[in-house]
Amino acid sequence: MVARRDFIRNGGLLAGAVALGFPKAVFSQGVYVSKRPLPAQRKFTSAGVEKAISNIKKEISDPKLGWMFENCFPNTLDTTVSFKMENGRPDTFVITGDINAMWLRDSSAQVWPYLPLIKEDEKLKQLIAGVVNRQTKCILIDPYANAFNEGPTGSEWDTDLTEMKPELHERKWEIDSLCYTVRLAYHYWKESGDTSVLNDTYKKAAKLIVKTFKEQQRKENRGPYKFQRNTPIQSDTAPNKGWGAPMQPVGLIVSIFRPSDDATVFPFLIPSNMFAVVSLRQLAEMSEVVFKDAAFTKECMELADEVDRAIKAYAIVPHPQLGNMFGFEVDGYGNRLFLDDTNVPSLLSIPYLGYTTADDPLYQASRHFVWSSFHCWFYKGKYGDGVGSPHTGPDYIWPMSIIMKALTSSDKEEIAECLRTIRNTDGDTGFVHESFHKNDPAKFTRPWFAWVNTLFGELIMKVSLEYPELLKRQYA
Image 1: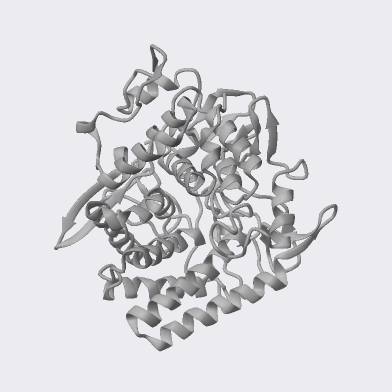
Image 2 (image 1 turned 45 degrees about the horizontal axis):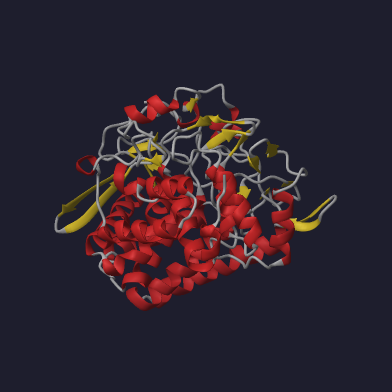
């Protein structure tokens, strides 16, 4: 198996896409030809998703933008899901794309944009219920793991110096992994009214989530988790004998790794702590309404409030040129990191995840920092600008940052510019990628990255609802 950071390709990527099962034809006789797998080769077909594709594509005047939407929005269903019934309950395993493993974060985000369609599509509803059920199993196997195998097969990372189990693909502790599972379960329940996924097994997993968050506040000791990897890549292992950098217990939750799977510099990753506040309040509501467990409801709310107070006390920091903003990482001692990463949660994504609103002055200051030359991983190139990541190295822009900029904007021209950049940086493949070189979109990483494809589809769906006139434009 090839590690995530090794999936860098250039000119030969089209051949790679064909090898992954996508049709070869791209542009034929003036018409963009679908790059989706042939119907018989698709992993799952949703009538609701097909209807949405047909309806929205009719609204899109730019033929390439419409082609990309048609290719990308169903990519998770077409290529990454395995659905079955197990003991009378739906079970769905979702790979991330070019890596044959299920990340809790990616799998949640991959099916997220389909939630508004489940009321009209029972099959799709069952598929997403299956994701919730599978994630519940995963948490009970190990709440500290970020990625899982479909069964107890072991992985390339079995030699990591941590408590590996054969069901785990990777065991990097990232707060957001657990938060994403809560987000999906909560919104599935709110969208469908179905409480079957919120059974006693889910309640057990929910309590384990809260227990894990409390352990990683590290008030009394360092908790049970540590991680080291034999690697020349500094960001792939944790310092201080696997415990991470020193921290002062102030109520924030330690995250040894970021959602990019890269190690944190300071252990309190603020966007992930913000996500935890949102998730704990969602757990409290599920506990109050579904579980009828007053004690657990109170525990969730008290922890959410404690983390929120600590964010306000330790994460609002003065930038030397820009004034007060949210720090990306802090340690409780006064140290802070001015940075943003492109995976979600990020500083840019704070309102997308529901912690605050887009007009919050602190968010706006943070957003200005992220999209500026003050930010060491921000790039401007021939084909647009955006945020890069240590994960892929200098000069590579992540489309996820551009999509997130659009999803958190109410400025029509800003959104339009984001659409233009995404359209023109696909490397003529019809898909969105992990990253592209700022001056050459034919150089990109990860030819098959389902999360960002589906996120692009989510953006088009949002624009269709809120700014349909933008879909009438040409973006060449």
